[in-house]
Length: 153
Image (cartoon, rainbow, N blue to C red; front, side, top):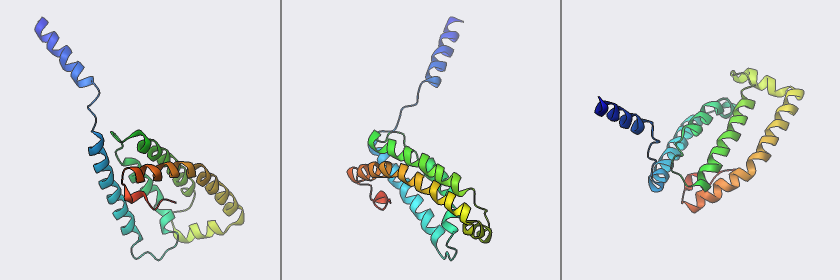
C-alpha cells in the first residue's frame, strides 16, 4: 500500500511539474518558421485583392495567428517585445472590430466625419504606444538574424 501511494505521489509530482522548455536555438528556428508561415498567409490574403479595406477586415484573424506563435524559449529581448506587440495589435483589432464586416458598409462608416475623427485618433494613439515596442522588436530581430521582421513600421 505504501509503495502504491509513493508511486502515485511521484507520478502526481512528475505530471504537475513544469514542462521542460525548448532550448533557445530550437525556439528561434521554430519562431522563424512560424513567421514565414504568417507571411505566406498574409501574402495569400493580399493576392487578387481589389478592396482597399480588405486588410482591415482580416486584421482580427491576423492578430490571432500572431498571438498563436509560440514564444517559449525565446530570448527575453525578443519574447517581451513580441508579446507587447501582440497586445498592441489586439487593440488595433478591437478598434477595427467596430467596422462592419461588409466592405461597402465599412466604407460608409469610415466616411462619417465623427467616426473617422474618433477612429483616427484612437489608431494614432495605439501607433504611438506601439512605436517603442516595434523598435525593440526590430533590434532583437536584427540581433538574431530574423529577416522576416525587417519590414515592421
